[in-house]
Figure 1 (cartoon, rainbow, N blue to C red):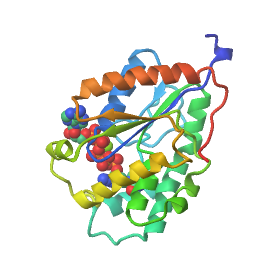
Figure 2: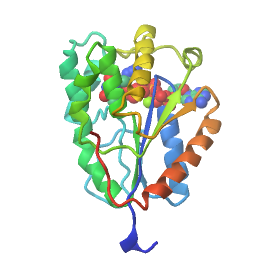
Figure 3: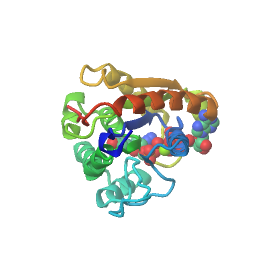
Length: 237
Ligand code: Z5A
Ligand code: MG
């Protein structure tokens, strides 16, 4: 494909519960696509802020992006159960603002023909806030206008298997009751009319890593091929 005909990149989102393997699969996918000659911006294991130095820079797009000013506030809140609680609505808007901090860079990458892999996005934003008692219809508008994903890979892990992947850590939401609410709210959100057409795919993430990875690569390759022919990016409504 000549450079002047170059299509846009695909926005690929990983979602799921704790320890469903989002970060693992995001990395595996990034490696597979890069080795296959695809140009991707992907999360890296080390949180680094994006730089203006375009060529060969690896960006971190894992949300929350704890490297920004707002991200540091969120990190303090998440990582210490003793930290002063944030009002749920304030917290929701901060998580959304943290995505807006990266919105222009994501859009620019897509337009330049690079695919972008995100480790959590608006769906986590809405679902965790709903699980704290906020209303779904209040939670959606702050993310309206953000780049819209071309595919959402939802990693579905059973509580028993997740538990085997390690003890709950010390972060704020790592408890059984919260995780149950989160699971129910993902289901509710994916059935919502504003979201149900977002090309959401469920993957059985109880299986071993490579089996999950193979299914994801197959789907994502098709998505990337399809969007290359679609002229413009779209946004969340
Ligand atoms: N949050 C929010 O409230 N609002 C928002 O808008 C956003 C987030 C964006 C921190 O998120 C919290 O922020 C999160 C939601 C909230 N609260 N909780 N809970 P985070 O993304 O920083 O943290 P996390 O996703 O919970 O962490 P995680 O534990 O990193 O999950 P993961 O990425 O899905 O799993 P992983 O790191 O890839 O794998 C976990 C372990 O299992 C690891 O040892 C792997 O080697 C292993 N693993 C992975 N896959 C497999 C398979 N298939 N078999 C066996 N072992 C495996
Ligand atoms: Mg993770």
